[in-house]
Length: 233
Image (tube, rainbow, N blue to C red; front, side):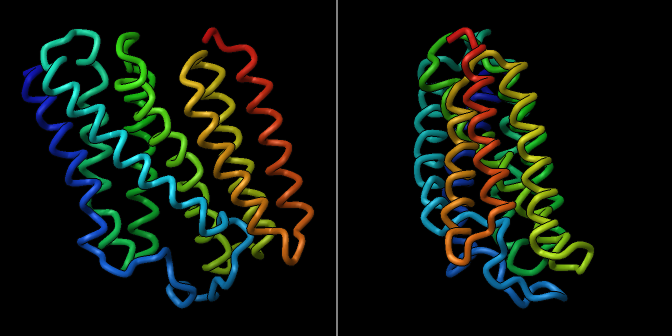
């Protein structure tokens, strides 16, 4: 079974990285996918921040490939593989779903986050840069992305105005990130990736300046750095 899980994760990582070909031209949710069109929503990071997906795809493929070729039956790698496989398998179909259903895509990305977080907490201690690091940056970005999707739903369906929706989403993302980073006491790549997303949100809210959203993002960055100072590595 160990070898099969290793193979499954490697194939899922490749399929996940290839998923943009299933949804050519997708550049995020369109404003008119919501009953209340979302034009420059304050909860969404600046466009450049999404370039991190290239790093995530490459690192997941490298890590899972190494795991298959060199650690296929390693007991230290085994515990995290089933959960990571689930997250990547669901993620493979996220982009096509996002083109047609915002609600469906939001549910899927929360499933991806839950499985990825489970995998991160079960990551072993060996081969840090190929086992822990790719899972950590993937989970960190999903922490931000899932809450952004929720914020878009809250505003896009008229449940809250755009800024309050962004604040609720940010508060939830920071709660998850701070608890996860504190409980992990390792995997600094996780917190750094969440910070990357928070900086992107601050940049997106420069013009016009949204003091509330930018301020909460800044507080979140400082809080994550403070919690990171308690980690053991």
